[in-house]
Length: 512
Image (cartoon, rainbow, N blue to C red; front, side, top):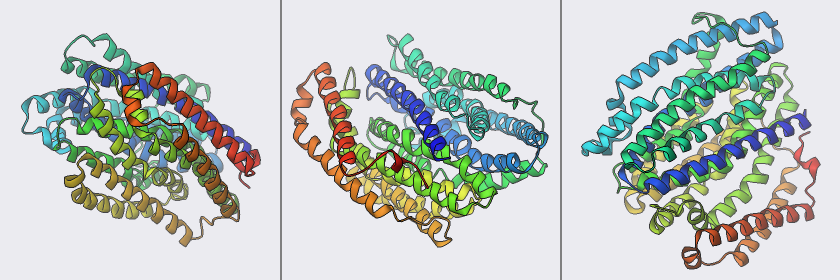
């Protein structure tokens, strides 16, 4: 089991790395062509609304509710019952999503008012945002059905294809932006919106042959009243909020940022994209891999293995998350300069984006822990506890948003989100401990000591190797790339050597 989990984690992380690299290229193309233009802010809001719903509904609530029920059926019922559940869920989900998509398209001005209230007094921004949202909103239909197919494949141990499909979104947006790049920023924004729409269709079509190969491409049927679908809906209600508090907080940041100076939304977006790199590669990848496993272990009442799997997931998060946080925090501005400071993205944009990146990085481990700890509840079909904790965390986030956004502008919004994430992760951990579902094993003290030693070595290398910011600003693009490669490759090597010297071996990546 431990070897299979590790192998699956590597597969998902590898595919996610490819997606994140293309995502960075996509963002580089966008910032290079459009810069801190008001149309950039508008596109990011129009993209973020369906993207938020995707994470809240498809990757968040639906996956966390569907996989435990599907695993229960796969463990305790025959294949016909399993396929009946898939068929009824498929049909019910499709009809609900079509209705939601139509409401979103028709009501796009209302959604812009809710999620971009700062655009109300600026007709150009408001009108463009409404148009773009009409184009991008149907994405929630296609990507939710993609997540449905991906959840089935994940439950069967087929992680590669679902992890690869986000690559298609990035390819589609990049292609759309480059094709119309000589045009005005508004036209580029419309083209990228159509890129999002097309990507949703392509991502769904990508999943279907693999679903057919596994024998799960069944005819959709309406099944609202069936016991299996009702179980999923019951779990989804609270999960709609619980697992996606971090995304809600990021969306609240965007809402408040729409009142700040032009460029604030883009600076936060760029920072969030860099944060998503380690979060998606490791935090989300690990939670994706262990959720089906935890669900099966809970179905068979294997409490010891359940606890060991959670311990394994958190240790792996620390092994990768801590050095990622250290590296991103101390290299924030050089990274932003190297990746984004081209074309219309100016030196000031890079500096301001690096400040909010540092603020987000403070909460990186919190974000990653939430992804793993939440699976401890959802795999047990407990969606209420994360909701209660999520409400507390979101309230704290809003309070700190209001306290910090005036003196610190967009940086205050990022810092408030990090504070909320740390609180959320802490409360999830305490709740799991209280019910004895998660008990830290005896390996943690030595593991923490090794992490401290390894990251001190990493920090020392960064301190002595990295040039000052003025030098980074004066370098040309290729000089920045060259020095960044030396920093990144050297940091990885130093950290790996240091961890080896303090005794970390391959067996430490296994649980049990």
